[in-house]
Amino acid sequence: MDPASERRCSELVARERSGHTAVVADSLLYVWGGYMSIGDEEVFIPGEEIWVYDLEGGIWQVFRMTGDVPPSMSGTCGCSLNGHLYIFGGCDDRGQTNQMFAVDLTDGKYAWKKIIPEIGSAPTPRDKLSCWVYNGKLIYFGGYGQKTLAEISIWKRNFILDESSFVICFVEGKSAHTARIRHFQKRKLKLGSVCRWGICFGDGTMKFTYLTLFRAAGPDPEPTAVLPRPGQPTPAPRWDAEDTCLEAESRKPGPTTFIAWILNPGPGLKLGRSWHTLTAVSETSLFLFGGLSDDCKPMSDGWLFDVETKKWREVEHPYKDKPRLWHTACAGRDSDVIVFGGSCDYILLVDTGHSNDALVFQLQPHPLFRICEDYIAKNVRNLERLRNQIPRLPPKLLKALQRRMAFYRPSKKQNNS
Image (cartoon, rainbow, N blue to C red; front, top):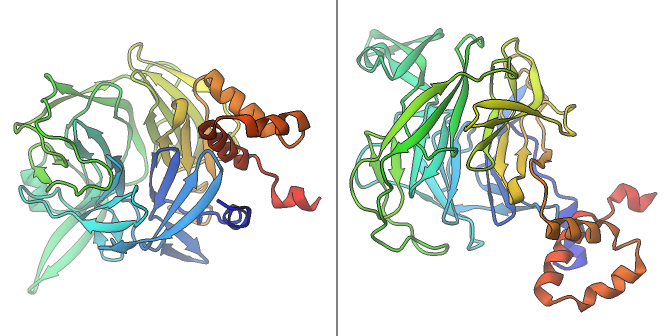
């Protein structure tokens, strides 16, 4: 990137938002959707734009999206698989949806494609759900949606009734009670990959504080076809209604069985919460950040949970003055966690404190190469001898270092002082 373009990009910053979706791929943070507050109005972020943050260079870029562009919405669930961003569910001006879209993040075109499965039916419309990738499948869990009372009675083991949000529907002169519900189905995962912590009921109160882990039962099926690579067409997907997951790649047929169990969180972590994030940073560690406490206070504490010892440990970090809820958290390079956006207010009462900060949490010591890279990038402008030696580096290393140096470029305020 030439210096003039770099200066223009350095002035770009993604809009403040909450309820968005974000993924990290190749040291790039992709942010889509969500909503923001303008005056007393809640406004959805346009679905035609995607923001990309270079975690190495510290530069934002925004790209126009084409194709089957999803409606502008919040509460959608997104994850990255083989260079593609998949989103499912969410809430727009018409309510919850169960539509699914995918976009290739590697070809630079950012063209959305609506996913229409050839087999099975999609889960019920919902938002604020969770999802993860396992064995070439996208697994969806929980969420918030609508069901008739008759449907809730039939599937009473799968739904929890939120009596605080009853609505009345009139169909052909007859009234039919409906209610918003939270959909809980015990589903899947490999140890350490995904878990759900805490539960918030419809009235905003926290009744339980527990950790639910999911693990796949039995050996993984062997792939029978070459998996799609970035830039190649995505195979026709199929919904597995029993497991509430979407099989996005060609693999041997047969259901995947998962086991769920509840863990007592143990000593240390005392406050229940919702609207938080929980991110796998290793095979045995999960990072919990922020959320809304059981007494409705935005939180800024960070915790690590060891799935082997079943113990919590509070993490010291420099963002104690930045409470967040309904933000995103993505695993990055060297077990870093990148938190973006979210609100610092109790959004059900005050909805003006949306953020556009990208907070990077270092949870493990960085490797020596990264320490040296950061030292050079931070000090090259002040050390003439270092500046003279940099051009002698191999081209690949030089390019990586120049990208990192852009991260530590002087701000506009520093240049004017």
